[in-house]
Image: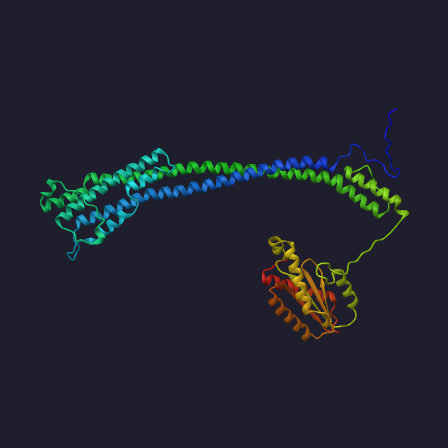
Length: 463
């Protein structure tokens, strides 16, 4: 015969409704939905950042490409101007060779913005074929202009030889034909002028200007198209980000309503029932709330069997050995109406959180102990003082039956001791003489306000 295990039932409590909604049944789907929405938000943010970076790169590239193209025009114009000036005026007003324009011409030749230089760089740029073709056409025209300039300068220098100076060493030489070498000086000068002012030269000069300007305009259109695409993707990402954010708000709102109805309202009724010493309703709220109500009702039925009150008051801080906050409050109560003069100093250890985060909590504990030692060494019982640790990084000192001069001297000694030990402790103090009617609350408030004013001046915040 098969035996069945018997289940012990507590007659003092009822099982909650089997169809009650459990917290896990609500939280797990919510967590999954929120995780998906947060993943979508992260994807949107990454997409927005990538497209923003792409947009910045596009604008940067446009500036670089346009500057490189216009540098070709600027360099070509400068070479044309200086060479033309020399051809027209080989000598200045004093009759000396017009070397200034030739030096400027030579220096410009050193800049990497010649036609072939710019054309070579454009071959590696991400530009359309049409823009590259326009730039190459301008570069070819600029090269022909350079050749005509060298030819014209060589014709002039064959008539008026130039002095041998280092500044002109880089000036290119052009090989004249036998026919040109046999020309008269006037014919050579006339031919030089025609080279830099003739129709072919003028056409090449106009070609450089027109092709460079057309190239820059085309680059602008290309970059605007790319920037428009990137901006559209950024806008799309932002719309998705807003949609996901609103979805999260909607999910959280629904969860809030459910928790309010199934958790907050039942617990509110429970609080009123407990305050009235009534049995709690076990058929409302989440399953866990109903279990809580059932457990309370069971405890309520057994409460009359035994009542005990457990008290423990730890008067000493385990880390520093100083009296703790409970002792501090008790001390204030004992001395509130004695009429004794009293000085209160409040301390706050600086940078405790930074020490904990960077060096570990063991180092933070050492810092607290060092601060406690620094404070207690100055404000010891020999000066009718009591030191307390009233918080994580907060200390307090109460000194009774001492003059204000002694109180101020102890604070000065503390400042010296703090500096000597290299410990940063913000402090605030207040003193009340006997018979002046200053309450501990007033002195505590003054010291607290003084301490935080010091922390603001030191730009140190509570850690």
